[in-house]
Image (cartoon, rainbow, N blue to C red; front, side, top):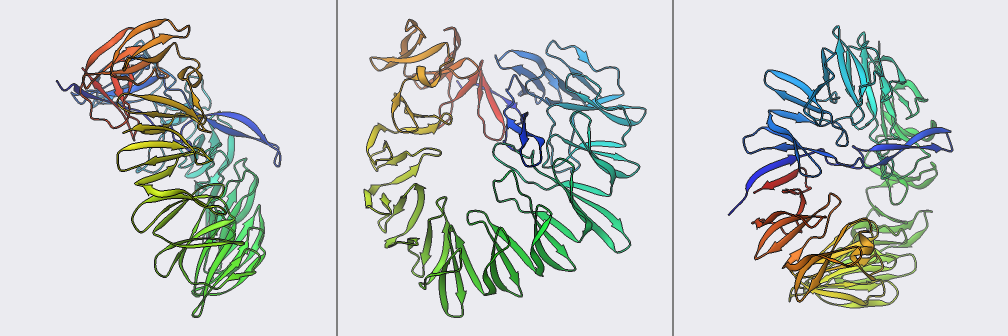
Length: 568
C-alpha cells in the first residue's frame, strides 16, 4: 500500500543565508565579525494533503494541526509560528497559545525584492500607529516604531534596511545603527565566505545628484571606504580573504580597481574581471586583454585578442601564435590550446588542444596523451578518461597508477579517497596510495560529515575515516543511544554497552539519526524505530528513493530544496 503524502517544508540551512553567529575579532580592523554556525532544527512546517499547513517538532509530534493556509517559522529553533488564513494572521507558540497580541501587526522580515524571500532568524518586525519597529524573536523591543519600512537586506542576513522620510539606512539585529538614514539606496555587495557567510559583506550606497546617481562604498563595520563620487561600484567576489576589499569602480566611463580604498589599477579599461585561482585581474580595452596581479602590478600589456588563465599560467593569442606565460610574465611554451582549465593546485592546469584532447601542464612537465577528459583529484593525482570511455588515475610524476578499466572514478569530496565503479556494478574505495580499501556491489558512497564516509547497499553498511581506515559506527556516532549491528545477514540494534535492544530481523537499517530515528527495511518496505527501540512504523512504506531515507517520527525527510515527509 502506498502511504499518503504530506510535505514538510523548511528553510534550508545554506551557509550564506541562515545561521546563528559567534563573535570573532578581525585583527586588522579590531571590529567584531560573526562566524556562521548552523541553527538546529527543532520545528518544521507541515504541508498536509488537504493543502493546509501545521507544525511538527523534531520528535515527529504535531504541535499545530494543519488548518492554516500558510505558516512561517522565522527561526527553526524557536517556537514562534506565524500562522495565517485568508482572513486572519496570528502568532502561536508550541502549545498553540497566541503570543505578541499587544501590537497592530507582527510578522517576519521579508526582503525589499519581491522575487526573493529571506527570513531573519533572530528578529521580527512589529507595527504600531502605522510605523514599524523591531522585536527580538523572544519578544524584546529592539527599536521603537519609527520607520516607514523595515526589511531584510538581500545577500546580507542580519542587516536590516530601514526607511525614514523616504531615505534609507541600516541597523543590525540588535537595533544598533550601522549606516545613518540618509541614502537613496543601499544594497549588500554579495561577498560570501564559507565560514562567515555574508558577515563580511559591505554596502554599496547611492545618492541622487544634479549630474545623476553617484555611488560610494561602506564596509561591514560601517566605515566609509569610497565616497559618493563614482558611476558604478561592484565588489570582487571570487576570493577567500577576511582582510581585503577589492572594488571594480567606473568613473567617466572607464573602470579601475581599488584595494581597501586605495586605487591599484587606473581608470583606463572598458571591463575588468578577476581570476580567483590565479589572483589575477584581466583588463580589457577595445577588445584587447591584459593582466595585473592583485596588488596592481602589470603582468602583460593589453594587446591580446584571446586568453585562457589557470593556476600559475596565462595562455594568450598573439596573432597566429598561442603563447603560455607564468604569472611573472615569463614565456613557458608556444603550443596551441583551445581552452585552459583551472585546478585547485596552482602548479598545474588542464589544457584542451586543437584535437579536443586533454593535457596536463606544469612549469616542469607536460602530459600529452589522447585523454578525452581529465579532472583534478588532489596533490599530484588526476582522474582521466581514455578514447574507449574507460577511467583511470594518474600521478603527474609516476604516470598511470590505476589502469583505465572502470566506468567511473570520482574523488570523494573533502577526502583523499576515490570512489571507483566497474561494469559489474561493484563499487570500491581506494585510498591516497591507490590501494583498494573495500568493495561492495551496488553501493552508494556519501560523506557523513567532515571526518567520515558511509558506504552502503541493500544489505551492507561500512564506515571509513577520510584516510580510508575502516571505523565502527560507535566511533562515527558517539552520542547515539543505539547502534546498528549485523548477524546472519540481518540487521538490528544494540546499545552502547553492546546489549541487543532490537533483534537482527531487518534486511537493512539506516542507523539512528540526530533526531533519534532510524529507517528499517524488510521485504522491500520501510518502517521507523526510535532510539529506545520502540517501533514507530512497521515496514509498510513503499518509498522510491535511491539513497537511504531519513525520518523524523513517522515522517520521511528529503533534504533537497524542501523537506518532504510521508505518512502511513
